Length: 246
Image (tube, rainbow, N blue to C red; front, top):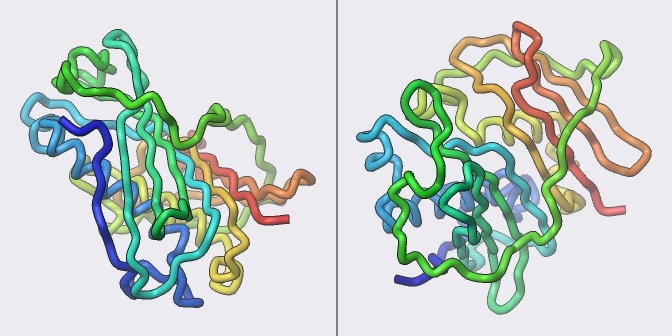
């Protein structure tokens, strides 16, 4: 059993921004896709988990961008589960995206397993192979940040109704749909500039079809932009931090 799962891909137009380069949204999409494929190979994919009334829940995710890839470039995407104990209820998965020997993006997600009666399941009870050879490496060694940003009326950016196309097999808003929503806080020119260095977001509460979300945006003195997505009942759906090159 290989510890690192690897796939080759081509940067097609659907992965590109207005400049013809791989978009930040595409990086998230690619990483989520290969995580799903690896899970299937390991026997803990969506179908296998659903039969037990369980599914993988993304808690937190971060993607760092280093170099630009362009239309029709050939890339290699890799992913692996990070070492954890059977008692853990939060686990991590790493990702890298490379062009040749150069890593152009890296990512990390924090996961939990939601079971029957909305209970979080220990990793040892997930059905994950007991003999999986956990790699010693991690794509992002830094701790994922915790978000406690307070938004005011002056930070209001937009309103958004959750669309039918945002909904995934879990019957709530897909993880990547949140990324698309927060990146829509910037212009196409800003997104295509290549100046986005990192995008990190925490998922707090699921959103469902038709819900009217409120989006807040605030630029801080440290050069980051903080974004909050709030549900109609006032609960935070997600908070994010977008870091631009200085």
